[in-house]
Image 1 (tube, rainbow, N blue to C red):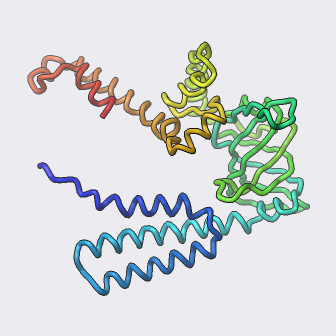
Image 2 (tube, rainbow, N blue to C red):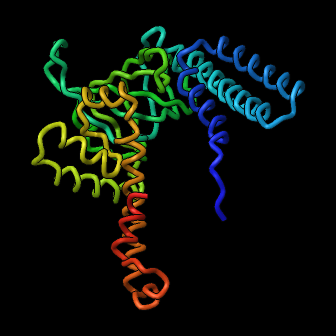
Image 3 (cartoon, rainbow, N blue to C red):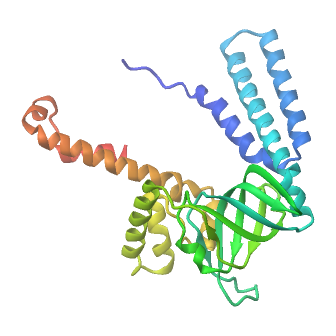
Amino acid sequence: MNEDLDLRVALPAVAAWLVAGQGRLLPPGVLALGACCVALFAALVLLRSRGPRAAVVAAVCVCAAAAGLVTAARVHARRTGPLAQAARSSSSVTVEGVLTDDPRAVPPKADVLTFRQLVVAHVRVERLLVAGRDVHLREPVLILSSDEHWLGLLPSQHLSTEGRVQSPGVGDDVAALVSTRGPPRVLGAPTGLQRLAGRLRAGLRAAAGPLPGDERGLLPGLVEGDTSRLDPGLNDDFRATGLTHIVAVSGDTVAVKDYCALHEGGALHASQSRQSRRCPFGAGTRARVLGVG
């Protein structure tokens, strides 16, 4: 059954993606007011017309309004929560949480006076100790440390650390920055899946070791989305040109497609006689088509 692809169905998704991505740069009140106005406009469009074009316009407006309201609520919570209050006064805190990504080392920049490399790690904070208060929450923070013990941690590990909390930049996807000097206190081991993934990533990084600097950090990202060794300058270039998905989403996608290609090729090889009667192409051709499709 052949049907023409209707690209109009993608317009609401694109509208929601754009609002969610760029709306966090606006004040929450302004974003929420704009979302309400867009939702009202969608209602007016449906009242005045019932055609397919009006339905598409209304769907785009509704999705954009929904994304705007959700983004406004999330930004408001991050800017007014306990972490934001502590960051405004640069308070000393103790945070407990879960590591959500591989820590990575950032080499010192030429225009910054520093003697040691900086390690950055993404942590989902679940407990905050500040000024004698014990607060339970779920907010992402960015850990900044000069201690190399962070590099040995794996995602899903529970940990605790002490440091000084600071406000992030406008539009950042974290609630706060936590600067710490000492090593983290490990409270739990990573999951079995993360241990296996860590061994695979370590093997790929070792295989890419002989490559030049940019290629050494780029190859793991292209293959399976590991950007822990990607040069920050190169990462900024990808972000500036809108190609970040190549070393994030696309890396994971390539890994999934490789598995599917190998699985399909194995199945075709096991039943070669039966498959050959159903398909004029060989197993290799089908696997290659699946891998790039």
